[in-house]
Amino acid sequence: MIKATKVTKRFEDPPTQVLHPIDLQINPSEFVSIIGKSGSGKTTLLYILSTLDSPSTGICEIGGINPASLSEEDMHWFRNKNIGYVFQFHYLLPELNVLENVTLPSRKSGDVEQKIPYALELLAEFGLQDKTKRLPSQLSGGEQQRVAIARALIMKPKFIFADEPTGNLDTTNGITVMKLLQRVNKEFGATILLVTHEPDYAAMASRQIFIADGKLSN
Ligand SMILES: Nc1ncnc2c1ncn2[C@@H]1O[C@H](COP(=O)(O)OP(=O)(O)OP(=O)(O)O)[C@@H](O)[C@H]1O
Ligand SMILES: [Mg+2]
Image (cartoon, rainbow, N blue to C red; front, side, top):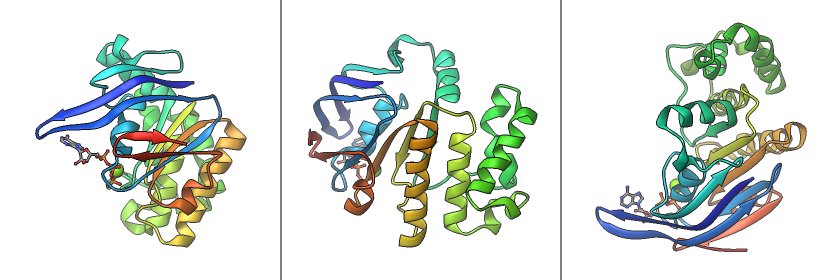
């Protein structure tokens, strides 16, 4: 479960109250989208819920853990094991091939070799079985994004956070990525939080939450 209790966020430079007290609960295996205009606070909220940033006030909880209670190192391990991230820009490493990029998160836990069959399985499911040895620069944007999703899945995370994962893609590739997320949610039971400003994509989640000026509504 992901839970936010009276979470606010204020930036000091320049002084901006970006999130007003937010209460939110996302249940295990839910697929929730947060939709709102540019500047409404979507990324800020996703960063806080996904442990990448901390709230100014209020309490967050993910999988029964309050990130504020963990050391930096424990937090790092928690993320690596439990959370998959997909961003608008994929952040694949340019010098690693597709398979190496997908297995990258397992380097930290030292089990790259064991993860290779699963990586190949994911890449095949995503239609990339013939491209496992290519470098990211030798792929289309949609293919790169599918590789990024495979990488987010390699550790079988309980939670997936996606910030505009379709932002860079044409409609066909955008829908492919959304359908992949739907499948991951159904087949793996992963809890997914998707941030988007596209109503059509937001509607593909099982629950939509609207955000305007840092406040939520259903
Ligand atoms: N580090 C920061 N310091 C000051 N203000 C910030 C900072 N980060 C974000 N903001 C402001 O907070 C508000 C919300 O930003 P956020 O990135 O959460 O919006 P968003 O809904 O994700 O927008 P977009 O759809 O354009 O990505 C914006 O007004 C932004 O200018
Ligand atoms: Mg954003």
